[in-house]
Amino acid sequence: MLQNVWDPLFLPNILVTNSPTIQDGHKWMLCQQPSFSSQSPNFGTAHSPNFSYSRRNTEQTSITRFSRSPSLPPSRRLTMNHALAIIFTTLSLLKMAVAEEEFCSAPSIVDSGSNSKHLYWKVTNPTLSPSHLQDLPGFTRSVYKRDHALITPESHVFSPLPEWTMTLGAYLITPAMGSHFVMYLAKMQENSLSGLPPYDAERFIFVVQGAVTLTNVSGISHKLTVDSYAYLPPNVDHSLKCDGSATLVVFERRHASLENQPTEQIVGSTDQQPLLETPGEVFQLRKLIPTSIPYDFNIHIMDFQPGEYLNVKEVHYNQHGLLLLEGQGIYRLGDSWYPVQAGDAIWMAPFVPQWYAALGKSRSRYLLYKDVNRNPL
Ligand code: UGY
Ligand code: MN
Image (tube, rainbow, N blue to C red; front, top):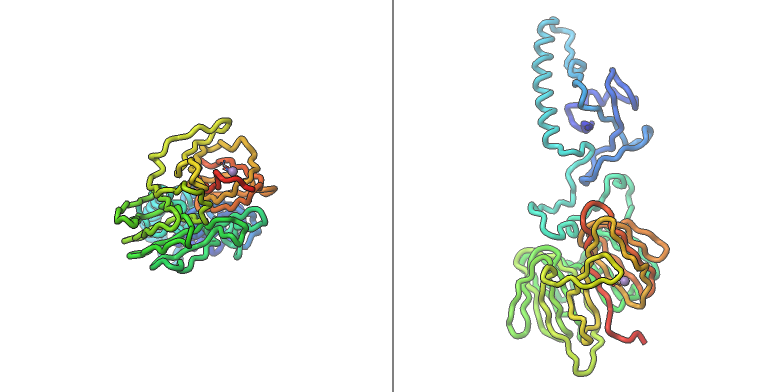
């Protein structure tokens, strides 16, 4: 275990130390400067200017070194040393007790005050600044290419959503990229209200954080909490009201309507949807919208256990908009391979080769827009 060198208790030692290995018979190890995220410690090279030294706290602390006072008689010095040793050791133990396992970390700046970790909490509390990248100004994992894009949380730009009140939106996928749909995050604040989608556009909303009340034209209301969703057919009056705060992921597209085959409002929650067959694949699949012909897109919820991956190296005519709700892994898009984590959004153009492998220690879950049921011609 390592003691963080930024502990003021150790500063007197640190100030006189510039050798990377052994000082005064104590072992010293490199430890990165305190991070603003809560990542695991990282150890760097001896000559990196951003690294300083930590000591092994398994050894007896060398308090005598900086409690030395030449003007005191040896007996007094010993007593004072003992007193200091007790205080010092107690404080060090207290510090260790609260410091969890990670000694090279500092509190996360992205812990937005939520005490309880709700389902999908990682989406709204992403790791914006992994500790090993914090000293790289301008670094982002976001990528924008002709046939795919990865939009990671540190790149999100929120601005007031047109037609909505008290709501900030970040458009993550729009037709400017080549898509026929929009995908955006809507952050609703206290007493916020949604606007309506453009004429002829259908809308799908999924609650990632908080709660909203959906009211339709006939005055029927539904409370939607995390993991709940709603599909609103085109040109159907409705409102989403939020009394506290909520984060939604929203998809909208112009409905490719079929004569006499209207779509209907749907309200549900993911955990109520049955698991579907996935021949040849291992992931678990739920679909949030009926698969019947009137609906021109669907939203899939796909779950992978760590180590599971897509067997099909997919290349298909459909487009995708993806939000990683939980977990982490590697997404292959075209010839590029991206480490991804909860909170990341991906745009996949038609025919972009795509493949996912779940890594880490917990389930990966993603939400996926897919256009269906229409002849591409
Ligand atoms: O249904 C799909 O196309 C889905 N398996 N694609 C994906 O996960 N990238
Ligand atoms: Mn696909």
